[in-house]
Structures are given as structure tokens and as C-alpha cells.
Image (cartoon, rainbow, N blue to C red; front, side, top):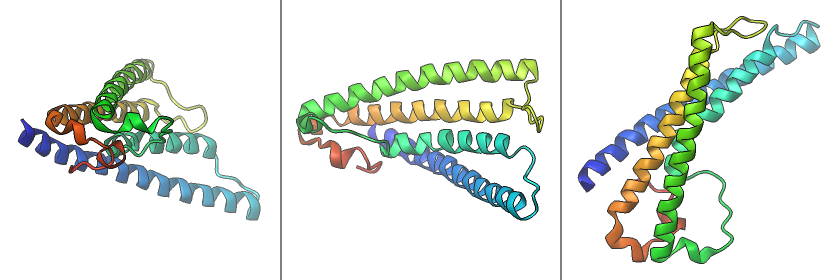
Length: 180
């Protein structure tokens, strides 16, 4: 079982890295888009038409395409008010519970976004000014959210498979590494 989980972790790490690289490419597009808009607005008195729509699309893609990598490496913001809950068997159990809660929340969010993507597909929903179809963007966001849920589930299963090492668990060192 552990060998399967290790191979799956490597595959998920590669897929998450692909999504993060895609988010980085979208960020580059956003930077270029903003530069073109600012130069056009201030030097030529002619702003880029539909820049607001494009920025909104880019921001949504950047945020949600980053989810799988963020969930895999536990790079989200954590406020550790009670450090004792991050060590030993109790920390191990708390980490597993929070991972399953994360899976549930991500699945609920993904379900809602999937419903919106389905409606956008059925209705032929497009953006207001540039008339860009919304379905491909929302569909990609849906895939990213479900991928993040799968990543969290995998992390929970990996932690469960390490029950024999639960007494030595330390959230500060264990959470961020996919290889441990």
C-alpha cells in the first residue's frame, strides 16, 4: 500500500506542478496585459478594450490553478494558536481530521462550481464585452478544485498509512514535504 501511495504522490506532485506552472504562465499573461493597458491608457490615451474582463479571468485562473500545489505542500496560511496540537499522536489525528474537512469543503465548492460550469455550457454564457465563453475558464477552475480535493485526500491517506510513526509526528516538518 505504501509503495502505491508513494508512486501516487509522485504523480500528483507532477500534476500539481503542471497546474502551478500553468498559473505562472497566466500570471505572466496578466503582467503583459497590465503593461499594455497602462501604456495604452497613459501614452496613447487608448486603454485596452476588455482589460477588466481579462484581468478577472486571469485572477480566477491564477488562484484556482494554484490550489493543487498549495494543498499538496501545505502552503496555505496557518495560525497555530495551540502548538501542542501539532505534535505527537494528537497532532497526527488533528492533521487527518483537518485534511478530511478540507476534502469535504473542496468537494462542496467543486460541486457548486461544476453546476455553474454546466449552466454556462448549456446557456452559452459569454463575457459582456469581449464575448469570451465562460465554460472553458469555469471548467478549468472546476478541475483544479476537484484536483485539490484529491490531493488532500491523498495526503490524508498517506498520513493514515504512517500510523506507526504517529507518536513522532510534527506538523511543522511533516506537512510541507511530499517525500517524508
